[in-house]
Length: 298
Image 1 (cartoon, rainbow, N blue to C red):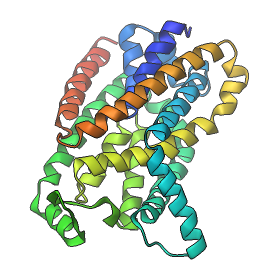
Image 2 (image 1 turned 90 degrees about the vertical axis):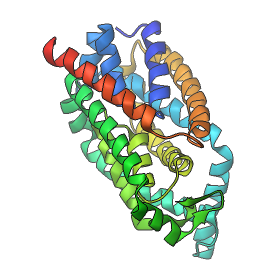
Image 3 (image 1 turned 180 degrees about the vertical axis):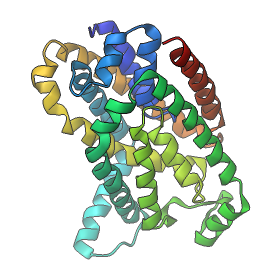
């Protein structure tokens, strides 16, 4: 049963964990399981359910929050995109960013449409989510370790570094093949427990970006994907699956949007001077404890 209290809890959870590198899908499985909301856990992995229709509203609200926060960036990026269609040239950083986002979105979009349903029904279960959350922590640790290697710093210096950080590469120097690789990395988020923002940040870090630009590219890239995922499933919310939960979906969406807005505001500032290590530690501890809980105690 989806009460308003549950809608608010899940909405806040979705809005925050979609952007924090700790996996929103993993937490949408694990938190209800820890709270004893077994009907929501079961509904998460079902072929079709009221809970999946509810999540549609949360995705749309999260994407809207990202659009609002990065509104000035998106105006420049969209303007740059249409300018390139007219001039048939890429000349400015905003024009390049527009096409980097396009080519990075395509792999995740195509593979997501093809495999999302299959992966969710197989892996959106507490034990699997706990294991993948632990793996997510290892991925974040690996990204931080690789970022400090001299080879990565040489990549940054080869392509052009930021004025305030001689070891960090400028975001607008990413090559299109690298953007495609970042897009492919997002496919890992189909596994409940693997974070989309985390894995895309790691992909950016290993190509020489600093934490601030890796996070910015991750959030910009997430916006169209999250929004498209929500809009694609809107018929579920408007159809029979949405009966009896539309009011809860609206309330949950409001809280998800607020949580997403304040989360991205915090994270953009956080990654100016901090790393992924606190989130890696959290994922390792939470994943291990949850794996023990749901692996040995059902």
